[in-house]
Structure formats: C-alpha cells, structure tokens
Length: 380
Ligand SMILES: Cc1cc2nc3c(=O)[nH]c(=O)nc-3n(C[C@H](O)[C@H](O)[C@H](O)COP(=O)(O)OP(=O)(O)OC[C@H]3O[C@@H](n4cnc5c(N)ncnc54)[C@H](O)[C@@H]3O)c2cc1C
Image 1: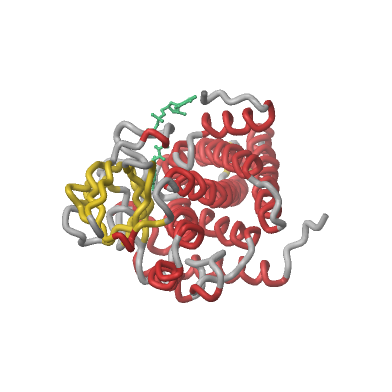
Image 2 (image 1 turned 60 degrees about the horizontal axis):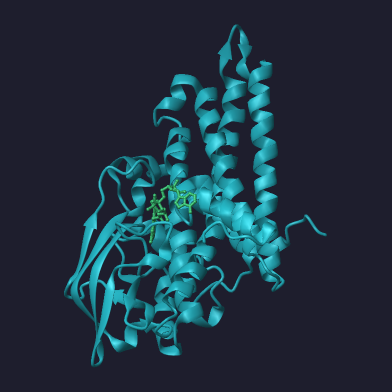
C-alpha cells in the first residue's frame, strides 16, 4: 500500500491549484452573484488538458488515471464545487464518458476532442418532472421515422443545460430505453434556464423540452435498449467526481476555518484557543481525510480493473455529508461573517446541498450499499 502521490500527481495538483487561484478565484464571487457560466475559464482549462482527464489521448483527453482525476477534481471542488460540477462531474463524467463508452468511432471523433478542449459544452439529461430516483420510469418518447427519431418530452434540473452545445438525452422507444446526442439548434429542442436554485449558480441548470424534435439516426448513442445501462453507468462516473469535489469543498472550509480561528479575537484570545472551536477543526480534519481516502480507494480499484461500484457509492455518500457538515460548521465558526459572501463558506453550503441530491440521492446510495452488503434489494 502506498499513500504517496506520484511526482506527476503532485505537479498536476499544483498546476491546477495555481491556475484556479489566478484565473477563477478572482471572478467566482461575482459570477455566482450574477449566475454567469464561466466560459473563458473552461476554455483555458481545456487548453491545459483539465477538461478531458480520463479520456484517452487519441480522442484529445488527458489519458490520466482515476486517482489523478480525483486529485484534479478535488482542486476544482476546493475552488468552488460548482466548477467541479460543470467540468469533472458533467462534462467529463456524464458526457465524455458516455460518448467514450457507448459511442461509435465516428461519434467519438466528432465530439470528444472538442469537449476535451472545452470548445463545446455538454450536458446529460435523464431526470424528468415525474422521474427522479426511479430512473427506469422515463416518459420522454422516441419514435423511429425512417432515418430519424422523433423525440417528445421534458427533462429537468439539467446541469450545463442552459449553455450546452450537445445534450445526451435518454428516452423510451418501443423496444426499450434509448439515448441520443442532440445538438443545440435542432428544431423542436427548447431550453429554459431554471431560476431561483439554491446553489451552483454558475452551472447553467435548465429544463429541456423536446417537441417533435427530429434526431438523425447517426446520433443514436449505443443500441436500442442500452439507454438505462448508459444512464446508470454515466451516473456512476459522475458519483466519483462528486466524491472528489466534495473532498475539495470540505478541505476549503477547513482551510478558511484554520485561518480565521487564528485571526479572530474574542475575550482577548484567538477563537482557535477555545476548546469547542478546536473540536470543530478536529472533526473537519479527520472527516475530510477519511473522505479523501475513501475516494482515492474507489479510484484505485477502478485503475486496477477491480469492482468499484460499492466503494464509489460509499465515497459519494460519505464525502458529500462530510462537506455539508464542514460547510455548516465553517459558517458557525465565522459567525456573522460566514453568513454573507465575504467568505466563500456560505457558497460552499449552498453548493454542496446539490450533490446530496444528484448522482443518486444519499438515501439511494445507502440502498445501493445495503443491497451490495446484504444481497437483498430494497428497491424491489
Ligand atoms: C443541482 C442539481 C443538478 C442536477 N443535475 C442533473 C443533470 O445534469 N442531469 C439530470 O438528469 N439530472 C440532474 N439533477 C436531477 C437529480 O438527478 C435528481 O434530483 C435526483 O435523481 C433525485 O430525483 P428527485 O429530485 O426527483 O427526487 P425524488 O426521486 O422524488 O426523491 C425525493 C425524496 O425521496 C427519497 N427517495 C426516493 N426513492 C426512494 C427510495 N426507494 N427509498 C428511500 N428514499 C427514496 C429521495 O432520497 C429524496 O429524499 C440535478 C439535481 C440537482 C439538485
């Protein structure tokens, strides 16, 4: 067992950290206030190879392993969970991995290099107004008409949806669930920004409507009947990114708390000298480290070609809960200053509620873990 990062991993962590410090941290507060998608940052990340991590080099990706992907995603989540959501979780985890694992050679050549460079943005749409945790119940309809498929239905809560150039969309056909790559601008493909979301303001969350939208046959992703497996496998990729980004967010809360606990004086002492404050710092430190190791282990199993589903759900469930506790306690520790956006801990709290819900809610993660341990399904 080796707990050391390789030289390449350390170098990539530092490079990502410095890049975000220079290009993203100065703009995130205003972008979050204005709910503005960070196009320029994503393009620059693409140029640095940060938007195509695990995708093989021959398709324009970084060809890195999953542990290294976790390290980079952690740095994104440390800068802002919403940036990790846009890039690691959705662009790479949901979209690039869907096309890599289910696309034909032509689709891979057509879309992957531009996605990996951040030249185009992607989203994946499975959830619908009546279909959340029960992803198999999809109501959006796909009917074949010669060399086209006609799509009708609605998708909601789609991250990157408002700005996406392409959407991977699941639907129900006569012979099972199907998935398509739908390009922006296709007649009958309508996009509406969802206003009033609690957090992840920069991530362009939208609802998508398909109104007799005609999709060419060559945009079918995988085979007829593959749609459910595609959606479930993509969500598992996303879960890994969620775990890593949450570790980063927990670490960021801890970093801000340590600094503030030394600088803020009350009763003529730094607040860090009070035992109850030290308890918060100790808990955050232990839990963040534990979440990090669960996440790296899931990545390690993946890199070794071993089963990783249970470990990925464990990492997603634990790391998001740890980050939620860290953000809540970070606001307590900062007092009233933590309650406004002078410090990013209030943004961390708003953002981190998202991944408690998406990627499969944490209740669903517990059912997945329970089923795997017990051999009894609570879903049936
Ligand atoms: C910020 C954000 C971004 C998102 N991005 C995307 C995206 O890019 N693409 C996309 O397709 N979707 C996206 N989603 C949607 C997300 O995947 C769903 O919200 C999620 O799957 C849960 O579905 P639901 O909200 O309909 O909740 P429901 O499924 O209605 O669940 C409501 C409650 O019931 C619980 N519950 C449900 N079933 C069970 C059960 N069997 N046992 C125990 N408890 C259960 C849930 O845990 C939850 O507490 C996003 C959501 C958010 C909040």
